[in-house]
Amino acid sequence: MNFEELEYNYTTAINSPQNHFSEWIEQDSISIEQDSISILPSFVDEITNYDWWDHDETFDHPPATIPAAPSPTSIKTPTLSPSSPSPHPELSKKRKENTNSSDTSRKASSGKKTTSKSAAGNPVKDARWAEQLLNPCVMAIETGNVSRAQHLIYVLQELASISGDINHRLSYHGLRILTRHLYSNSVATMVKLPPCESPIQSYVTAEAKLFRSTVIKFHEISPWFAIPNSLANSTIIKNLSRENSSSRVLHIVDLGVSHGVQWPTLLEALTHLPKGAPPLVRLTIANNVLPPVPFSVPPPGYNFPSHLIRYSKSINLNLQISQVESLMPQDLTLTPGEKLVICAQFRIGNYKDTLCSVRELNPDLVIVSELDGSENCASSGGFPGRFAVNLEMLWRFLDSTGAAFKGRDCAERKTMEGEAAQILDGPGIEGRERWREMMFGLGFREEGFGDESIETAKALLRKYDGNWEMKAERAVAAVRLRWKGQLVSFCSLWKPIRG
Image (tube, rainbow, N blue to C red; front, side):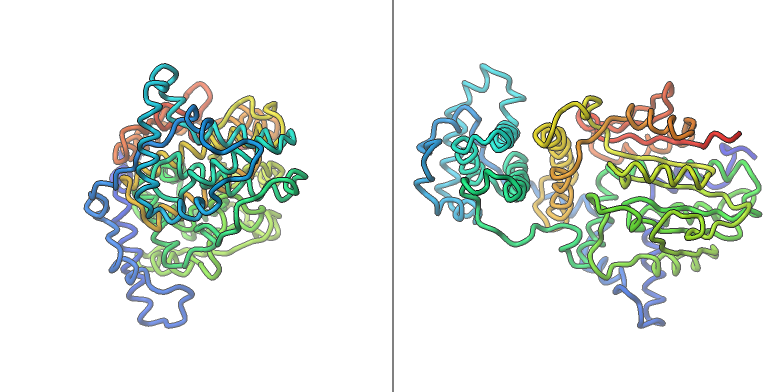
């Protein structure tokens, strides 16, 4: 039986993840009454207080009107002197309270004054004034230009806000990273830094209940992770449908950042394979193999395996979950004849030595998804170059996330954006072509996802904001995701070359 002839319509399943999450959650509720030693509270309590499925109703309130921010041309002419301290040090505190109506009026007035100047230049560039402050500030710090760095920090401090317009939010996150960077730079002794604040909301600082609602809601309203997960899951199903799946153990190594959200849909689909589900599904969680990267570290105490185990029992699937600290064969306890699949979703980043360990495992399939940045990133040069590349990607994340949440300011959005902002302090994002060269060098060959997997992902993408687009590049066997025409990520499928 062909994949196209499957009695189970995987496209319908992947486009209706709420069905599987709901069953997963409901089963967990039943089991939790029988087992009071659960690591986490039941998902049901979360769903009761959190309108998960009807997010359109939750977010249909129009966002508060954010006044136009001043353009960079007007920022250079305030009363602040590049070489003198701020005449109003208390303004920073007032700005962050975000309740001073006169301050709001001042911004709106400043924005109106510069409209004609912006129209005369590049409207798109002028609208992104946060980058035009942050990147020169980084360069001033690196070159030791104390007066310019101090001036730009004062201006950024005045405009930064965790809420509101994307420029204000980008300024907020960028300034926090710059402050951290200044402490390790000699200029720090000569520049007056913003006061220390409480840690920004992120995965690690979030409560377990908020973290769960955040990752599940983001999967539902944004394709940032959902599309790569869809491609990985449908590819696994397609490969199993072509063999006697009921007689071969399926072993998946989870080297990703889904924190369990990726798997309920796949587990349910496995039970509908024409030749039956695998006799055993092994899920090995290998997140601790690598140092932390954005989206990889959950809050203390969070653990999703117990929920997946309960869900698998409810659908009569034999699931075994383990966690490992390395990718050594003896730690993974590989068994002869099992089908080994490595899902490396947004986790490898700059730690490419891990792929050498993956190659030594000789897996059947490897799915690699990563951010898709500049092909010239390696030659961009030092912290300023990396910061500029990462800042561009963070802009796309904040912009798309703001659209996904329909402009609504909520704890889930702040958690996702605070987590994403950590990218500014990391290595530069490389492009798909560099990853492709590296995989070839390690002895892998490209595999196409196939029409079924691509059509499934396209159908899923139609659920999201219309500014998202997906392109399957058949010449290089990769699928690339774009936001407003700008690259965001790629997903690729690989098999080892065997002699």
